[in-house]
Structure formats: structure tokens, C-alpha cells
Length: 277
Image 1 (cartoon, rainbow, N blue to C red):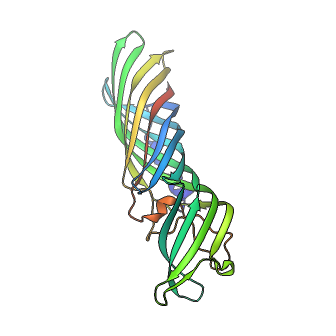
Image 2: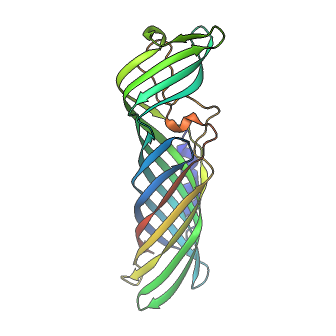
Image 3: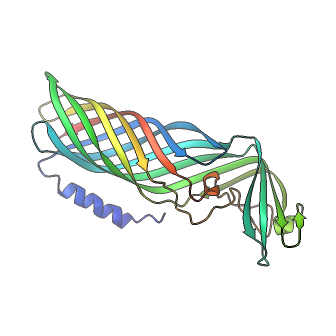
């Protein structure tokens, strides 16, 4: 996705220009950050993710408030094929313009994925005093999740690309100068094309008053996106075709093998914050 810093800066100005007479907050959150996928034959090991956040909450009544802000989040995970040695098929066009069936067989293929995004939250807060200096808090709302980048670091013990030309019933499996053959110790970097999605967001926790105008905030959170963050027009081979060599093959990524795949960030964990006036 082409990241427009002027667009984000405009949103930030609008958000904070409406924050007069509101309570401000800064915070961090950390927990399980999963990029959920429905691509067949692929699994992922989830890693810890997190976010930095800042914003404000405008009080409507003594118990209700509405909040917004800006957040920077990061997701990391390792993605791999369910079977160590797997062949996947796609359609490609060679340097002469001839179409062929491209078969890619990999050994122990892995992807280390890093997704970074800007999040714009809008939520309703309910709070109730339950003890001296302690308030119960519940927040529910939505976030606009805008990926900045979604990077891939791919590796495999081996990558073998072969071609089948159905018009002439021809199989080519060892012609390196035309991109067909075997490569060992494959490593390469790539990036997914993305678009923004809407996320639901819920927090349940407590604030602890530390002074007349300041308090600490601790809560559990759950976030789930709707719609896919991937933006691609066609299905592609997870290891790209290089018509001039078997090296320098760009990884398109396992999620690119299905253009209709739903790739959805989901996270839950703990958030800590500091509220001030």
C-alpha cells in the first residue's frame, strides 16, 4: 500500500483539535498478535505483538465518554507449509510471451512476516467508581487499521521450478538460464500489497487515581478485523518466476496463492496506560 503521510497527519490534526476539555492518555499494549488466514495447506506460529497509543476521552456524562486517538501496531509471525516438501502450481508467461504451467517445489519453506500499521480508534467508554480512587472501565468501538508495510523474509532448503507447456506437451525441469531448475539455500525478501480494514475493539479494566488529575489504567483487550488486508488482483506463485535465472526469485508469499484469501489481524492481551489532563 502507498503510505500517504499527509493523509495520516490530517487525521491526527482533526482528532486532537476536538480534544479541548478532554482527558488525554498515552499507553502501550502487548499480547498475542495473529494474522488469521484461510489459505489451504498453510499454518502459522503466532508471536507476541504490541502497539503504542495516544489519544483522548471526552466526557459526555459522569459515566460515559467518547474517545479517539492514534496508534502504531506491529504483528509478527512465522508461516510455513503443512507438509515440508510441497508442490504448488500457478500459470506464468515466459520471456517469449508463451504461457505455461509453473510448478514450484520447496523443501522446508518458511516466511517470517512483519506487519506494521497505523490504527485510528473511535470508542465509547463506560466507567463506574467501585472504590476510593478506583474506577471500573469498559470500552467498545472500532478502529481503522491502515497497514504501512507487510514484509516477508522467506527461506527454504531448496526451491525447484519446472514448466509444463500444454500446447506442445513439453516439460522443462533443468534450464537455469530460462528460470527452470533447482536452487539450494534459498533466501529472499518481499512484501504483500495491502489495504485498510475496520477492526472491532473491546477493553475491560480499571483506572487507579494517583493524583487529582492523573491516573493509571490497566485492562485486557480484544481486537478483530473485518475484511482482508491483502490487495491483489490475481493468484500468484508463492515463489516468483524469474525468466532469466533460477536465482533472484522474488517471494510473493504463501498468502498470495489465493487472491480471494481472507487475511485478518486478530489480537488480545494487556494494555497499560497513563491518563492526564
